[in-house]
Length: 556
Image (cartoon, rainbow, N blue to C red; front, side, top):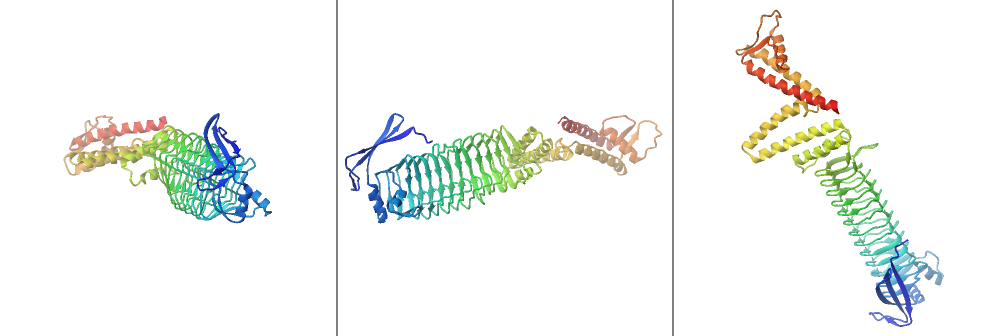
């Protein structure tokens, strides 16, 4: 039931009424508008004779009902009066009903009307009580409902067709139980619902079609339990849903199609109900939800396709399903996440090329697969992001993987984070120039060799162990080769009968030096002394590195 806080009281007075354009009526309607017990407004309108109106319609005369009170206006009764077949189209020539008041407990009926002429208008008019039916109407020109008010059980435009003119509901008030535009064809003209207030109405545009005109719901307000845009076909014009307050009802755009027009939901408010954009075909469009607020409740883009889906600076309060079918970029930069964001590929692959999560404040969980989602490529494919930005995004993924217990993926994200941070620091030094550039190159090379190549930043103990074997063997080979070219050698400190050859002595000494055992039975002489010192330091470093990497793996 619609909210009856605002209601009308009508009295028919036996006094004449004349409009500003000179039309005269024998009776006057006194209409008082109340909110609760408080009177909001009073106005007087002319009371025309319905039979006279029907006769004018039958003669295809221009109809001017502006500033009129119409009780029980019905094209069904018109057909009955002239004994016409039900469903026979009725031509309404240049129909004008601005600032009028339609009222009927049985229903105001415009079914199968054909609005003819340059334009038809119900601007600033009120429709009160019962149902208002515009089903199967046709209009080839402009149709104006700007600032109109519907205080009804049901307003229906089902199966109506509008060809070329603009359809305007700007600042209209829909105080209804149901508002139905099901299977409505809005044609080539622009459709304007800017600043419309749907109050607690359940609204349905299911199967509606918009061609090349712009569609605007800018700053509209919805408070109903259901807002249904399922399987709507949007054309090549703009689809403007900026700054819309969708309330706490369930919003459903599932299986809708958008063509080449610009699509914007910027700065809109989505309440606690479900927000479904499942299997929506956004075509090759850039879809913007920047600055929007999504309260508790599911937000679903599952199986949808688009070029760019921008959700920067948003507030996500509920579960967000981004398991999209196809997209070049999803941008969630600088948004706040309070619940779950799901990119996890399931039965079908998530075909996404780039993901931007710069500056996200994550108070919930991000579900994403490093392998199946190709998370490394999602971040590195960002064309305009700096290495510092990418490093921070990998760090965010690293923390998310850790939180979700996916430790191998955490390690992969951590390695990507450290590598991009190193490059960012090197680039900063190069930019500063001079000694800073030299220092940046030196420390980058050192970190690349010692931390990255030796053990993937302590994430791969097997790799550290392999590095240990390589370093030990490298120094052993140097101990074999150097004595052939310079004063150097591995000498015994005691008389021994081991009879070790140069290769055996070199590898033995390298192992004892690397592991800092220090038996003392062999010692370096000549130029290999400093080489042994370097190997000792390398051994201490790599053994410590291995311990850290191994314990880190075991503890998790």
